[in-house]
Amino acid sequence: MSEPIPVTRVVDHGTAKLMPDVDRERAWLLTVDGAPQSYVDLDEPTHLEFEYARRLGHVLDTVGEPGRPLDALHLGGGALTLPRYLAATRPGSRQHVVEFDRGLLELVAEHLPLPAGADVTLHAADARAWLESAPDDSADVLVADVFGGSRVPAHLTSVAYAQEAARVLRPGGVYLANLADAAPFAFLRSQLATLGTRFEELALIAEPGVLRGRRFGNAVLAAAHHPLDIAGLSRATAADAFPARVEHGAALRDFTRGARPVRDEDAVPSPEPPEGAFGIG
Image (tube, rainbow, N blue to C red; front, side, top):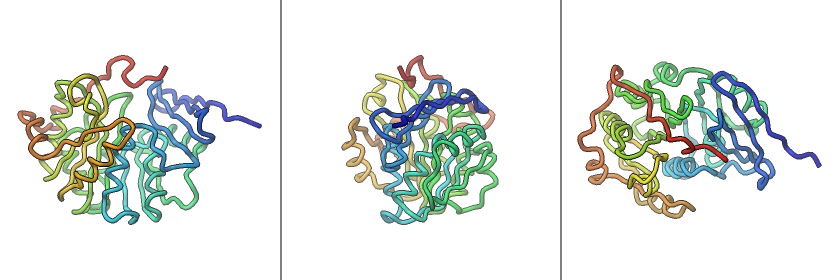
């Protein structure tokens, strides 16, 4: 029997590796310059290995009626984990994926092809430039999972960016972002303040240890113009192997208090992770 072998390729912005999972027959881990980017099981696209991806998936499950197709815009491509998830859980969804690294898109398309029938269009472009050209009210969900290296680019952190995201989303739409920070959470709090200038409802999902300032880690930010299903999200995230907490309402306003929205001229990338924070052994 032939076994899958790792694939290494220099892409536009680093060295990408696809490594097979010895425990799952057609599952792969994508890393770029040693940092884990995505995990995909080609036989089971609803399997979300990374904790932050499961939390994003939980929020996606609450958008509209269960199983209803969505128009989705993904900023940041990776191995197309969430587009595969939506194609499986909401057949008929129309999805656009914007990824700056054309070489990475080509690597994934070659070695990890999308399932037949998935309506996913790939765009090699800058996320904000593409967003600024997108039509008004064209998306039910916008997922931002963009990292330059291990940091969120500065131009995707400002009020002007948030305004574009709000413009593209339909009134019942949901904005989702994967962010990373540590105490005292200057970046995370600034992003909540920034999204709060354009969205009435905000929620933050993260492990209690991260929220208590014990370690650097991922946090999922959800924003909408309508009430989010906080009870459903709390149940789903509490049932995960690594439970998370959902912060919203008064507690989240207290967490954000004193933070200022980010202007384009003041924008900076998210903080550099400490050595080993997201690496693999």
